[in-house]
Image (cartoon, rainbow, N blue to C red; front, side):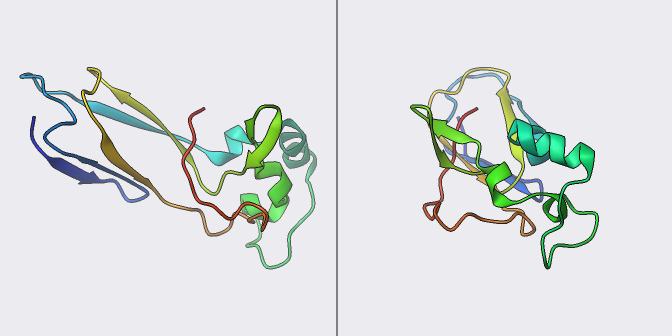
Length: 125
């Protein structure tokens, strides 16, 4: 394999020689999966019913309609352990990878953040 990097604005992908060792090209498809589509069920209801506005959030923005509790959808063992801070991405390599790669996702500045969740990390859906 060979090292490569690609920046798509809110998503960046970097591979190294060990990421894929095959002799044919491996295409990695990335598809946006918006935070709005991954919110807690109660927040989806709030969005359709108008919800409440947050102070300081731009009018018409997703954050203007909901609070950080609605983004708190990351669970482990039945407990909420984190929240979304930006859009998700569907990552689909054409051929399975042999090693690791670096995937960078942008935070959305208008998403209200729960101060209880202070350790940034990535999660699988």
